[in-house]
Length: 320
Image (tube, rainbow, N blue to C red; front, top):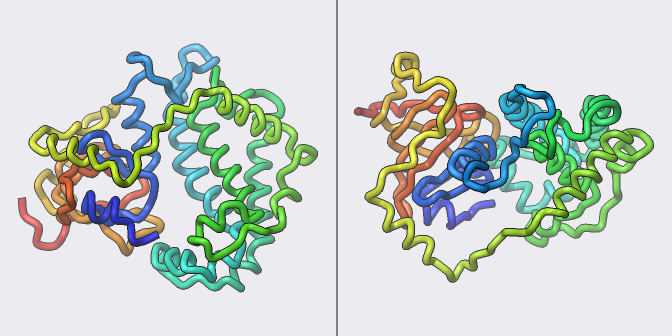
């Protein structure tokens, strides 16, 4: 929720969604691009992990399927379903007011409460689509030796949906305005008897994740040394674009005025359209663009957005 000084003041970034990733002076927005940046700049060949483990089918590169699965299914229709399970009292809190601005229209708690049964039905439909694969033929959602992006994307959505449906986490979500005592409304849909394959996979995934070491390091707000590190990089070149199978299509992008040096506006194509990020176009690729924000923050960064799920438009009167 606004205000978000870490983004707005530090980076000059009006982007409303989470998460973001900073690698030096390069800031990456949206999980879909963050994943590809991490995989490229910290590859398994250098000893890092991967969310694209080897396939159990020799010679099959499933990466594109997993990416599409995460972006076009779990992050969109599945996510809309799980957000529909949020307790209606949340929408009457300041969080609801904030989300109305993010979405672009008012939110009526009573109307949203009446839609919860419909959303539970949609939640069950998604589980039904998953069940055959996980019950009959596969340990993981893709034929892989270990969990992949597909498993991670479904797990966090399913876990979050189950928790939020019973009110877990809403105290923090609403800044302490709504308590966490709630009915477990998702249990009637997601249980071992109805969906044994998904249930077993869910528990198998949790066990796998629990077996991994916790490498997270938290930095306190008082520790600002990382800002100085970024400032020292201001004269250095950007990391550029994550490689794609085909290079930039300058002819096609040129027809739309998307050429390096112009001023552009970038917004998500679903929510957050009222908070565009405006900046000078630095790089234009098939899957990614980067800009130098017009709004200057405490540190000067280059911001990267994926092209899937975002609208990039040249600003009127912009010049090369």
